[in-house]
Image (cartoon, rainbow, N blue to C red):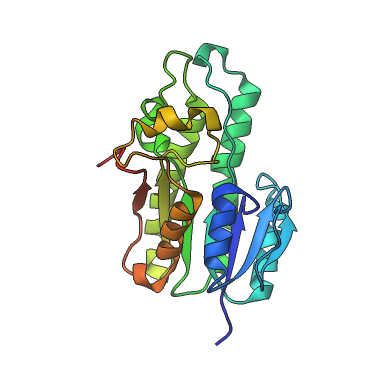
Length: 240
């Protein structure tokens, strides 16, 4: 049997790059991102420039992954955030940009990849956020306004994962989400790390590899009976 393939959007940096490294041990991985990774690709992996807001580019990336092997794992990690502002000051262009990449990008990827996936045994993992479950309460930004667009986009990702999990369950394709908390290097300025760590029960920020290991688990046969789930990777800051 040929080695399976995977596609990781936003795979060139941070959490996405960590996911690529983890999955490359068992998959041929198509790294789909606007920018190339700063480090050399793991053996058996390929890079394709891809804007997740462009359905044609996403379809091309899915096809590139299929050329590497049976498409088993699909991960949406592409995301952006922006400074917190009061909602009355939030520009419509900023709202649309965050929603388009974080949420619509996930939809575009799932729509393109789902018909092409291995059945049974396919797995989709969407990267959400603790903020997608708690809103601005997770971000400690109330004095500066909120990141309403970011929080809404990540909440939408969770709902999308659950909806698609139900839709694809009969076909043997599992869909889950991972909700990271405060992760080093992932959209958090270094000068905020110590203050954030003091509020985390485990006493530190998480590492991208720790999120990636959760993604790898959900993509593996060890998670064959898990679908429609949101796996928290947050050091204990949210226990629900």
